[in-house]
Length: 164
Image (cartoon, rainbow, N blue to C red):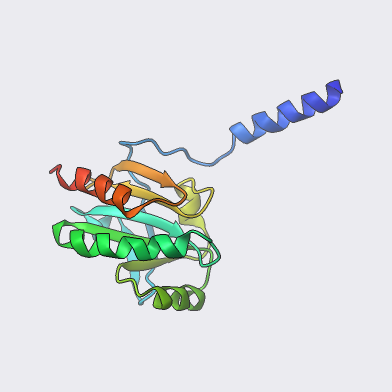
C-alpha cells in the first residue's frame, strides 16, 4: 500500500512539473506564423497590431466547437469594425478537413492551421475549445477554457476595446 501511495504522489508531482506553459494575464501572447486556410500565412502578433484578438483553438471532432464557432459570428460582425479580429486556429488537422468544417458553419472570421499542434502547445492548450483574448498591445487579457457564450465573449472584447 505504501508503494502505491508513493507511486501516485510521484506521478502527481511529475504532472505538476510538465513543460506546458502557464500564461498569465498581462503577459505577452506567444508569437507564431502558420498557414491561413484561404492561402498564405499569418504572423501573430505582427499582422494584427492594434487589434483586439480572440485566438480560438478548435478541431472538427470537438463536440462544443461547432455551436460556439457559429455563435461567435454575430459578435464578430458587430465588433470587427471597432477592431476585433478572431483567429480560429484549427489544431492538428489538414486544410481539407478544416475547410469542410468551416464551410458548413458559414463563418467569416479567419481560420488558421496549426497542423503540428506547436502553437496550441505554446499557449498551454490542454483541451478544446480554448480561447485566448489578446489586447491591442499583444498582452493576454483573459482565457476561456471550454465552451463559452457569445455574451461572455462580447463582454471581454468590449473591455479590451474600451482601452486605448
